[in-house]
Amino acid sequence: MTESKSANKGLNFPEKLLSPIKNFLESELVKLKRQKKNLKEADPFSDAGRTTENSIEEDLDEQIGHFDSEVKVKFVNRQIVQLRKALTRMKIGKYGVCEKCGEMIDTDRLAISPEATTCVECSKEDEK
Ligand SMILES: [Zn+2]
Image 1 (cartoon, rainbow, N blue to C red):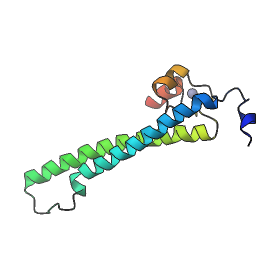
Image 2: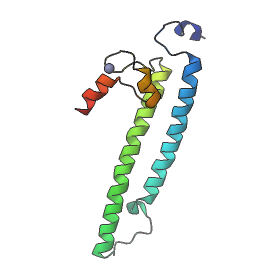
Image 3: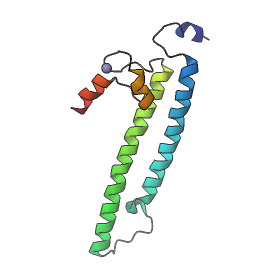
């Protein structure tokens, strides 16, 4: 066990603070995975009983339904990736450190989005 050593680095969050965040992220991950599964099941394209002899209107409905769930799945996927990233950062002891510039991420930011892996400044860069 080398945990006592790494706890003294100063940059690291203490385990006491980290474990509730970790639990939160892990439960979010479970929720998102369930959500993704539901979305995929709601996608008319994944309906096994779907016929190829639809009217044009039915086809259109399915197209829209498919597009809608695709957008949602994409959104959920992005959140899943972000949560996994945050959990990985935790594992390597880099949680709370911006992955781009290496600065500490504002704790206010982490309180609002605990899955954040970049600081406010770098996330602004991303959105540009
Ligand atoms: Zn940064």
